[in-house]
Amino acid sequence: METIQTDVAIIGAGGAGLRAAIALAQADPKIRIALISKVYPMRSHTCAAEGGAAGVIKDDDSFEQHFHDTVGGGDWLSDQDAVEYFIHEAPKELIQLEHWGCPWNREADGSVAVRPFGGMKIKRTWFAADKSGFHILHTLFQTSLQFQNIQRFDEYYATDLLVDDGRCQGFTAIEMRSGQMRCFKAGAVVIAGGGAGRMFPFNTNGAIKTGDGMALAYRAGAPLKDMEFVQYHPTGLPNTGTLLTEACRGEGGVLLNKDNYRFLQDYGMGPETPIGKPELKTMELGPRDRVSQSIWHEIQRGRSVKTAWGDCVWLDMRHLGEKKIDERLPFVRDICISYLGIDPVKEMVPIRPVVHYMMGGIHTDTKAATSLPGLFAAGECACVSINGANRLGSNSLVEILVFGKRAGLSALDHARSQKPGNDAALTTLADAAQAKLRALFMRNVGKESISGLRKEMMDTMEEGCGIYRTQESMAKTCDKISELRRRYQNVALHDKTNVYNTDLLSALELGSMLDCAEAVAVGGRERKESRGAHQRLDFTARDDSKYLKHSMAYYNGLEPPRIDYRDVVITSSPPGVRDYSGAKK
Ligand SMILES: Cc1cc2nc3c(=O)[nH]c(=O)nc-3n(C[C@H](O)[C@H](O)[C@H](O)COP(=O)(O)OP(=O)(O)OC[C@H]3O[C@@H](n4cnc5c(N)ncnc54)[C@H](O)[C@@H]3O)c2cc1C
Image: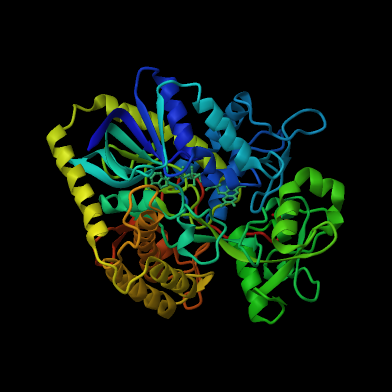
């Protein structure tokens, strides 16, 4: 097997992976950096982000307010030391992107423009129209090209971490073009593999968001944290799940039920504000968990709009006018016309909540180090715990920058401090990973199909772990996922060829999703309270006495994960009431 010897290897070339690579290359032009990605970097999901990135920049804003919005928005499950670091680094990173060429929108006076976003009680979301992710990723990608020591391995799929002598020293990956396995040996590894929303049937996520990065770390012994917290975004297109960014509401769009009534005022997000003049703090600018849950209640009350794709509510943007929509939300207009045949300038758009983001992920400390020495993680696959039980829109694009950089620099420190590994031991581990793959190729096609298992997984996740959950629904899903993980051992490939074998990739991605899905369901079943995105019909209140804790899921082979708990770091904000009523304090 061909070996690539490098100082730091990064799995994932989305926003977090590219930011880590640039930080490393800038820190030391001599170190060797391997950056691998299962797709061409610009196809990473970061590219799809629309609304923007949060960072304190205006005179009327303060770090303190960003801190409180984030911690309260996360229902006090965020680690406050991580949030403090994050909010202070955020503007530095956004200015850095500007210097690298990111075309942020401007105010009339030429300063950086900011827009309102859900749960942010002050305008602080920087944006580039509604294509912020595209511009951020492009800026990072073009910057990364300046550095000779970043060696890219596009269309490589990482399969197993190599852990010897108690530390992570590399991984194996399939070169998809040839089907050959490669062994990456490294002083440190950074995982920046993105989210896992594809385990649900209705989601905004790119097809590649299958939780591979989380599964790699999990199987190697690093725990997954707070996996039960899955974010539903309120405004997805009802047929495809394509996201209509929160900026639709930030710019003044309103949500209406079938009677054209702005129902959010009935769910603690009133008082009603004048249409077209969004009031920060209330109504459509409530946080995502609350807004999605309100839509669920409207559906239960029979006040939803019936469509061919199920129960919806209206998103009305007509009052914004064509000029503003074309300037601020051109992509949204495009999406509505292309996928639904509806022009938001002229008509209301039916929307329904859609799975969007994983708050949980690989547990890391504030230096992006996982529990496994030599392994670092950043971005959506990681859980450094700034998002707690509910992420605020526009914090993630900044998280990938702040902690991507941090992961790169921490990995460098680690790599420098290590003695060379035991070459022979690593080669033996890589051979074992290859043997596993060969065995998959050898298996005869039986009755289990990849698409069949995937469908069963998605259905049970939606049934058991949706916006509202119960003990019974989650227990059923836990059993089902456990059964599917066993049946997965019998899937076989129809395509036994080497070149771009997508059958093989689908099989491996399904394995990753099943492992992550089990952590979501078991974590949820064990958390007997309602907090943020984890809402239970049988335990409706938040229970700080028992569950002001992070859940930690430890991989346990074919058995369900062992769940343990870890204290939340509280520095200055004791748990309080989340108030989006607009009441003056
Ligand atoms: C439609 C949409 C809109 C969004 N809008 C916003 C927004 O406006 N503001 C905001 O803050 N957040 C937004 N988010 C969330 C945010 O975009 C993501 O959380 C963030 O971009 C994730 O970045 P990442 O670098 O962690 O992962 P990604 O960009 O998803 O990159 C993951 C990388 O890992 C690689 N990879 C994965 N597995 C493997 C493997 N096994 N081997 C090799 N490579 C692998 C992939 O190839 C890819 O390069 C949005 C998300 C979506 C889906």
